[in-house]
Image (tube, rainbow, N blue to C red; front, side):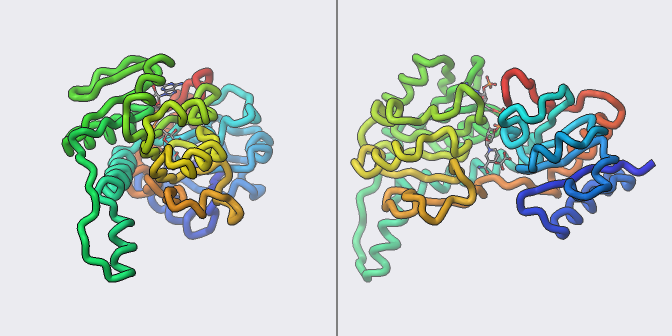
Length: 313
Ligand code: NDP
Ligand code: OXD
């Protein structure tokens, strides 16, 4: 029997849906993706979603499970619109963790080697060494050391950085100083030089980077966010960048995406803007686990990587 799956991605287009379907068919030739907004979606037991219109999802009465097309699920559980108790599954893909790690490493290396200073010099034909930050003295904090953050932390350690991690439950990762709790969050803000947010968006993490957190960071700190935009009070970040208190901010995610043209974030010399691409979902590497999740859902079983609703991630 056909396995009908309702599909929606915010870059929704037929090519993307076809690409996913072709990848999924390798593992189950009976999988048939149909657009979430189509009438056929009424028959779907599973929905494969990225930033879907949740009111539409809610109307599909045959759904037995939802799968996020990313590692985060905030786009599905936000505002509790989907209030019924069916499994919500997320992707956990080592490819994405590595991809994120590359982006973070690149961001940090650009920061400490002043890549953008050299670009500017080149434009003006200036041939002169610029100040380099001594990486051995830098302390890095990775907020969120789960599937992605733990890989980032380990790779940074491997490159010779001093790395600290922060999570909800205590972790033990060789070579990484792991912390939990609000006091230790404050301690990391106060003592680290580079702050990397890789947290999921939950009630606890919303607005976690605000004036109170930025102000207690060391003067000249570097802030990197690839978690979620709503974890940062953008006006406060802008204020602290203008003061030079935050000397560099590398951002991949925003409160409103796509980042509106009128956002002041675009204009600050301290800020680098990336359009939510730090670790993109890869159909080639993620299809197998999604096909498996679809099978579990259709058999009334709980798939691996089903989130704990009460935790929100
Ligand atoms: P995980 O759930 O595997 O890891 C989340 C980490 O955050 C865990 O260490 C968790 O602690 C910690 N955490 C959660 N809540 C709190 C809290 N209140 N206080 C302290 N620590 C907390 O998620 P992933 O690593 O897979 O992904 C993290 C996020 O990265 C995603 O939710 C998404 O928002 C973002 N992301 C961004 C991408 C991009 O391209 N920009 C791509 C992919 C993901 P514990 O270990 O104790 O559970
Ligand atoms: C994700 C993302 O959550 O791309 O996977 O942001």
